[in-house]
Amino acid sequence: MHTTAFSIQAMCCYFGVSRSGYYSWLSSKPSERICKQQQRDEQIIKLYHNKKGRYGAPRICQQLSKKHGVYCNVKTVAQSLRRMDLCAKAGRKFKATTNSKHSLPVAPNLLEQKFTTSKPNRVWVGDITYLHTNEGWLYLAVVIDLFSRKVVGWSMDKNMTATLIGDALEMALWKRKPEKGLIFHSDRGSQYCSKTYQSLLAKHSISSSMSAKGNCYDNACAESFFHSMKVEAIHGEHFTTREQMKHNVFEYIEVDYNNDRLHSSIDYLSPSDFEYQWQQKLAS
Image (cartoon, rainbow, N blue to C red; front, side, top):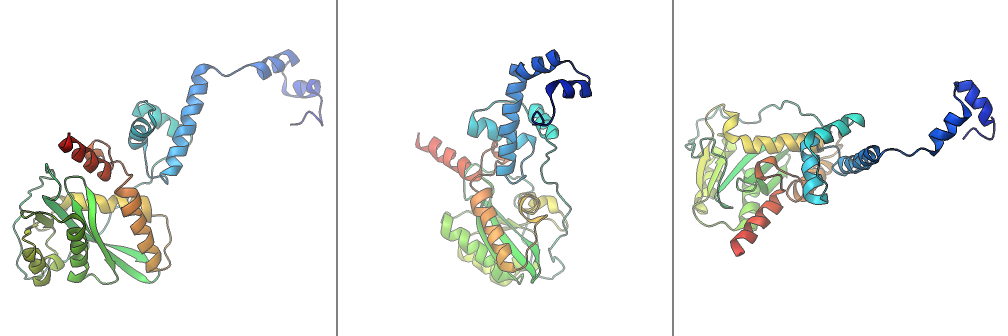
């Protein structure tokens, strides 16, 4: 780029290299290994940005293999990310929103931290979290199917009430139409213990199950979803209004999480893909 201003001889002298050495470097080609590395780096950085910085080496490795037919190990992907100074979004600790200091009846723990089931619509788990905007808090209630980890119902409102969790359950019932025998597991918050919500469960012949007092691990799947959502879609963003937050949460649940995000507990498939493959096996 400086050849119009300076001669090759002058620049070689300035940098202490010979003209023959310069022309030899100019005509040389990168090795096959370097070419492959550069090609892989380009694929990884493209995938990293397509996933909005949410994926680290394990998920990028799985995505390359399952979606693009590119096979490499996790260490190779991790080295590539370090080389390009890229890393997945980091997590934070969250405060509990549960109000378990009440005198309402509490259901027994039917799961006892057994977070697997062989069929859809056998066990659902639910929880509530809060999301900050300049207008104030926005509360999100979700219903997750333990079989595929799919969010099958959700609801958002500025108030944390039994109506909020009832709307999330109603959405799940409308979308999934479960058979009798379904278990719904939650923490022992006052909203889930309320007469209104328990009556809704009884109306649809759903058995209520609740975590032990103060044990967040008893509802780990719902906690894990909120952690992923906040790390991947909330932190680092600024939300002026509740409507902005609602749009962001809707896109994360219905576009990214359910249909695209790879989940380690279901063989690095998205919840929708996992359910589709299960249905295909039943049909065959």
